[in-house]
Image 1 (spheres, helix red, strand yellow):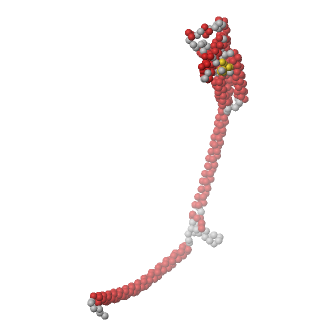
Image 2 (cartoon, helix red, strand yellow):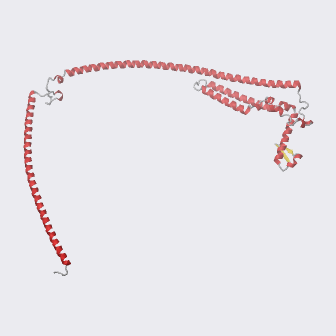
Amino acid sequence: MSFFSGAAPMPMNSDLAHLAHDEQLAMKIMRKRQEEMERRTKLQNPRLRQGGVPHDVLSAQVTEKRAIQAAENEDEAQYAEMAVQQDHLLNTIETIKEETQRRRQEETIGYSMANLRKEQRREYCLSDPKEYTSAFITLPDDQLGPCSMTKFQGEDLGKEGKKRAQKQTADDLMKQMQEKRVRQEAEKDIDRFYDQKAFEASQICAHCENATNQEMQDDKIAEARENLEMAAQKRQHMQMKMQREAQEKHMHTHSVMHSDLLTEVHDYKVGSNGKLMKGEFKRLSIEEEADVYSQNAHLVVQSRMKAKQEADAAKALHSHTLGVVAVLGAVEEEKSRQAKEKQMAIVAENQRLAAAKKSNDVDERRKYLSFHHER
C-alpha cells in the first residue's frame, strides 16, 4: 500500500502499519516526515542554507522588476507627452495633474501590495529572524544523535568568503540605493516639470485675468460716460419740455382770460343754422327774461286755481261720503233690529215647543204608570 505526498509516491513506514485503517492520518504523518527530510537536506547544503533564494528565482524577479520599471518608464513618457500636448489647455491642466498623480499613486500602491512585500525583497533573507532559527533542528540537543549535528564540513566559508558575501550584499544594497536615487531624481524632475508648467499656466491665467479685468474696467468707464451723456441729453430734453409746457400754459391762460366767454361781451350767439351756440350762451336778454317772468306768473295763477278746484271737489266728495255713510249706518241698524226680532221669535217658539213637549211627557208618564189603560 502506497501514499502520495504532493506528486511523488512514498512508501509507508513499517511503524505506521497500525494506522492502515486511517489513510488520511497516515498520509499526514508521511507528509510531515517528507517535509522534515527536505529541510534536513537543505541544511546539509551550505549554499542553499546561506545564500537563501536560488539565483534563477532572483533572476526572474529582477527581470520582472525591470519589465515593470520599463512599463513605468513608458507610462511616465506617455504622461510627459500628454502634459506637453495639453500645455496650452489652461482650464484643465490642474485636473489632469491630479488625475495623473492619483492614478500613479493607485498603481504604485497596488504594485507594492502585490509585488513589493518585504518577503519578496532580495535581501529579506539577510534580516529574516526565522531563517536562521528554522534552519536548525527544533529538538533539544540531548536528544540529537551524531548524524544530527548542526555544523558540517565546508559550512565555514572563512574570512575571504564572508568578505566576498558581505561585499556582494553591500554592492546589491548600493545598487538598490542608486536605483532609488535615480528614481527619486526622475520623480523630482517630473515634479519640477509639472511645477514649471503650472507656474507658466498660472502666469498666463494671471495675465488673462488682468486683461479681462482691464477690459471690464474700460467697458464700465465707457458705459458710465455713455450714461452721463444720456443723462445730460435727458436733462436738456426735460428743460425744453418744461419751457414748452410753460409757454403753452401762458398762452392758454391769456386766451381764456381775454375770451368772449369769460368777459361776457355777448349774452349769447346764434350760429349759421339759426340755433344757439352752447359754448357761447351766457344769459337771456331783458325782454326774454321779462317774458319768462310773465309766463311763470301765469303758471302760478293756473296752479292756484287748479288747487282751489281740487279742494272744492274734495269737499263735495267728503259731504257725499258722509251722506252715504249715514244711509248705510241706518240700513245696518234696521237690519240688526230685524235680526234681533227674528231671534226673539225663534226663542219664544222654542220655549213654547219645550213646554208642550214637557206637558206631553208628563201625560205620557202618567199614562204609563196608571193601572188602567186610557184611550
